[in-house]
Length: 486
Image (cartoon, rainbow, N blue to C red):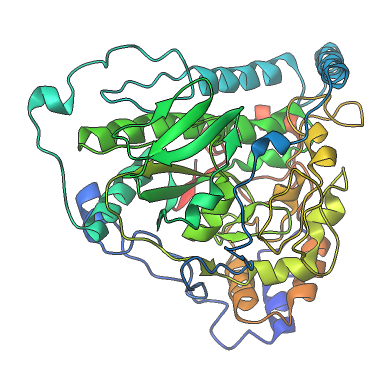
């Protein structure tokens, strides 16, 4: 019989819940197989969650939001390090890298850094060809598009109704690698999720035909009334906490986002519409990607201030987004019981090495500092404590830190669905909260949330073993693709 990390079998665990015999343990969701874009576009549903996830009111996610109190956040309030602090962190990085390479430390060898550098280079250098003005995250884009444009070929503007538009976009974005494609109408309330100021540039909406960026402002066309949001899963190699290997998930995710947005923008422009994005591949720079992920229904807000996905838990790099003038049918927020679970779980907070995540029992309207926004009743994060642990090795208070994704990996919802027990637990959590504390305790007992966790069968292994893996059987990136892993 298949076992977890402990000696408790899945059946014994099910029996302890009184679920064996009810048919729950062996039940599986049956979904239609889609073989091409035409079938996917015509299949009706563009996002499919487990049976226990229910849709709730528009602009009414499970975390309480006061739209009158909510104000656009000035991202200049993000904590900024002094020149001396920055120089010290850079020196820490260099010292840690040199030490890791010199000692041939597993997960921090020369080849580990070489792979990371390759991912970072891709993230920063993917060009964007375009036939209409738009935001872009790099200055290396050619002045003229490669090949022919829609206008050169005399193609008409592609137009369908909002429902068909969204299904078509979902079909293409799914092919490009995005998951859980959602959409929301950008009204005056939703505009508050945009930053008021980003990179010392005021962000505003105006009656213009195309986006305009100057030295002091970023102007977005008012006609771009719809926001498309999609999930970018993060590799489970992030489980290699505090060594360089763990950053593959972070920079791999951003690189995927960069490639996806390049393809998406070309795809939408070829149909005659705008796809406005700023910061693709490096994190969205004009608005809160977490805010849009929650309000559009890609997941719920978690204690760790990440979007929690019913499919991937906290292990997603970001809920990437773009604005468009293509009319779309909006998707509402969801409730899978995760926000309620966060209020008793606290696992991400207890395992946070910087103590940046609140361990309070109740969420609050009060931000913990200027780096938190207003209008959300949540668990504010102390980013002054959090940020030094992120990024390249040497950022943390302890020598040898290789970047931190601990809250994402530790999250109780960050589990593979290959094991039926995880589906049962998620279904129970969504239906009732009476087992929440018990599930958190069992999650610890089974050893989940620790570093060096295999993306295949959830056994512990080392970075060195990853390098020596069976390339025919072990996933290349260790990330979710479609219904399986690659």
